[in-house]
Length: 148
View 1 (cartoon, rainbow, N blue to C red):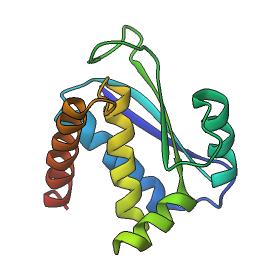
View 2 (cartoon, one colour):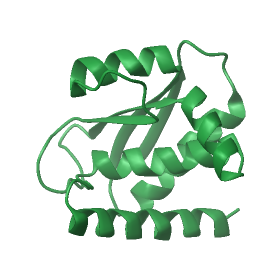
View 3 (cartoon, rainbow, N blue to C red):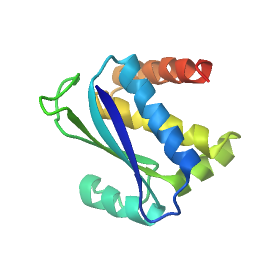
């Protein structure tokens, strides 16, 4: 079973943004053949800034944060099925979308893919890991766009 719940806090609820986040995360789970549940929180810069500062010791807002339920090697599923939480700043996503010349929905879907890969154990701290994660993101997003 794959399940993605999308919550909103600190911003006005937007069904198109919630749908994009859910589609991105579900696409990543399906591509990686992972089972489980993820909760995505769409929020504002101020809220994500607090979490970034408190959990990563980086005193600024960011676009996406992932909180895996279990740390370590790649994760396919946990016994209770809960994989983790993702937080996406809609304000940062909107700015990045504008800079890149695409919709905020597309940026949110991409950030949900990125966050889900982190939940599943992918990382980009080392160049070789970044190559792997980037290739996965591209393949997932290509499949997601072709499915529309």
